[in-house]
Length: 182
Image 1 (tube, rainbow, N blue to C red):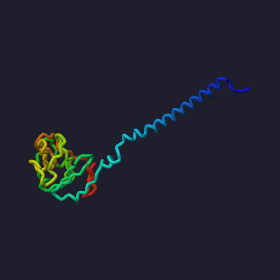
Image 2 (cartoon, helix red, strand yellow):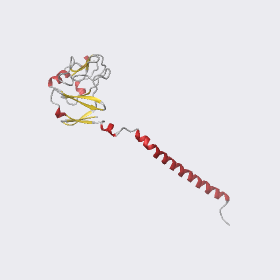
Image 3 (cartoon, rainbow, N blue to C red):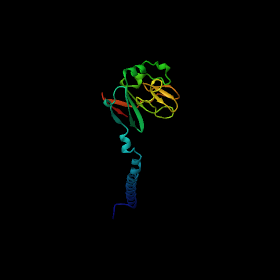
Image 4 (tube, helix red, strand yellow):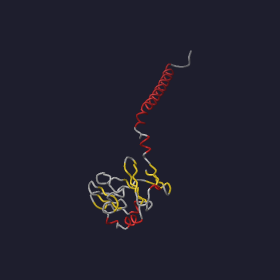
């Protein structure tokens, strides 16, 4: 006769049944994760969007006293190679007299290069002032003709309805002649 009792068989059956339920549950969870992955992955930014997350700009192509506009994250970025006179004009302003109190030294990494997002902080227009023939406003920087905001040679709001200075995007110098924005 067998040494096992009926209760031993019941325990073995329960143990096997528990194990099979655990294995089935694990396979179900893995299957659900595999099925959900394409949906989850579709929420990531597209590769072309990630490519625009940072851009590199060659500065040697921008002569002193001129500016260049590049697109970054769907917004224009103004890069101005400032003259000594423009730098002096920006630095000679008393910070406490400004609407958005920010010294020129806080807005630039190298005095001769100003990098700003070219979007008026009033209603999102693109100010004029990138070309030599443009209206540069009363302070030699940019002028937003839509509502009359005037920016100085540091991109700071000086007159008009705009509440903030032109934004400075995150950027770094990769060399003396190249920057990375973003």
